[in-house]
Picture 1: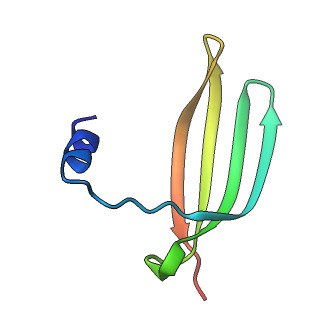
Picture 2 (picture 1 turned 45 degrees about the vertical axis):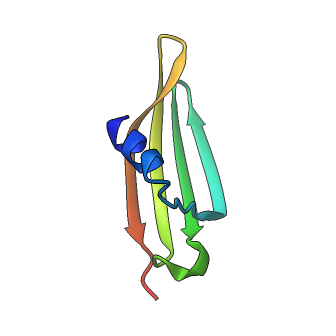
Length: 72
């Protein structure tokens, strides 16, 4: 939270990657997401994002997040 407050205080520019493809697998109280992202203006090479959520106490919480650059 402190980092975000600092970024806001200096009016830092934030970039959000476009989701090119997206798939979900729901397995009971666990969900796996696999997505390919592309950053506008090629600020970063395209990448795969894999995330795992688990349902705890009635809420979905991200347990693991991994990003891997897509090699040409």
